Every structure is written in structure tokens, then in C-alpha cells.
Length: 109
Image (cartoon, rainbow, N blue to C red; front, side, top):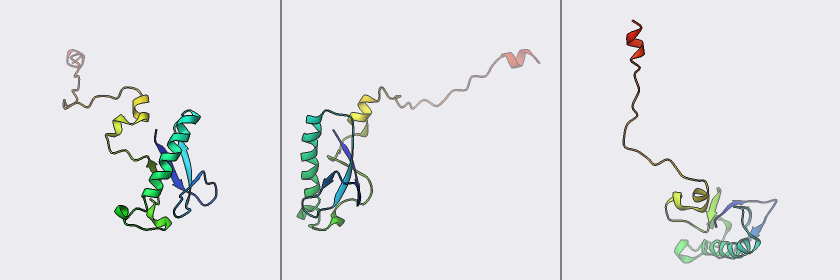
């Protein structure tokens, strides 16, 4: 399950354990146990934003400023839980659209 996060100075659902930055969480509908598991994963990924591999910045600047999703997803967007639950998508087609021309207009002339 992915969670959408947004920096927040007012209502904060979670805090980064390294820099103390607060975030508002927006959950997909899920069970309380799934939220607990995902919350611990999110805390770990927030901590990873400060890792040497990510630049080692120990300030709140290490986190994205805009909305972002955690845990990160590197696969195709069509395989996210939200996309899977949204139902079948229209399969892209290489066929150009065909316009039906009515013969009726020619008969009326």
C-alpha cells in the first residue's frame, strides 16, 4: 500500500526521526494492521532520505517539498494498487480512428 505525504506545519500525522519534519498522510483505504505496517515502512523511508546515498543532508530539505508517495514504486503505474482496483483500462491501440460516412447523405441529393 502506498501513502501520499505532504509537508505540514499544522496537522502532522508522522514525523521524520532524523530532522523532525512533520507530514500529513493520505491513506488508501486499508485495515488498521496494514496501516501500522505501512507506517513503519514510511518512517524507514523518511529516514533513508537522509542517507549518504541520498546526499547525507540531515535537514528537512532532504525530503521532497511537494506531495510524494511512499513506499517508493519503481514499477509501471498501471500496477499500483489504486490502478488495479480502478478496473480495466482501455488497451492502447495503434489503429487510427475510423470515421463512418453515411451513405444516406448521398441518397438524399
